[in-house]
Image 1 (tube, rainbow, N blue to C red):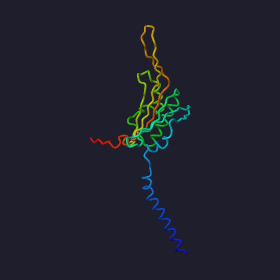
Image 2 (cartoon, rainbow, N blue to C red):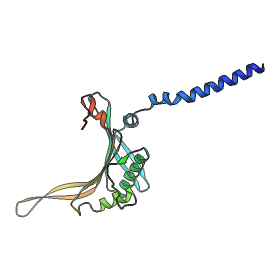
Image 3 (cartoon, rainbow, N blue to C red):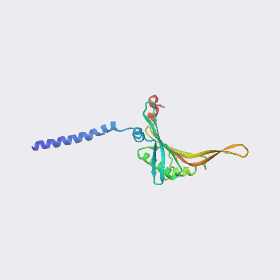
Image 4 (spheres, rainbow, N blue to C red):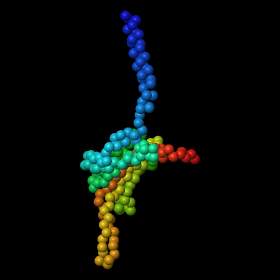
Length: 196
């Protein structure tokens, strides 16, 4: 009976060791592409509501597919007059992507302490320095993440007393956009790798 007990423990230990050894190889095949993961989350949503400490903002979901019908881009766009909520949402999303391994294509922060401060400052100077939008790009392998914020204009035509029409652009809040794309999948089967 003692001999049987020892062989049962040995078999259990052997099973645990084999399971631990081969489990990583099993999960490699099981992990999903990031675009596929985002597609599963947003495929049935046309619009989402995002809540921040500064209020809520709404965004429309757009999913682009390549010629093979596979999702290649997931983007969320919106507009709001609540600039604090936009800043909080975009900064939070950037920090989330940085934790996932994305890196900025250039040093956007410069002397700024945070992405929220950088976005807020750029939004403050919209229309004062000739710029009406601000964009940042991040990459991780063949993945691309873009963040864009800009001015949302209402354009009205004014009739002057002299009979000439003039265009008047009135600021009506801000537009924002976040986009994650698989650049390899975007190229589809027709894409080729350029070597230089």
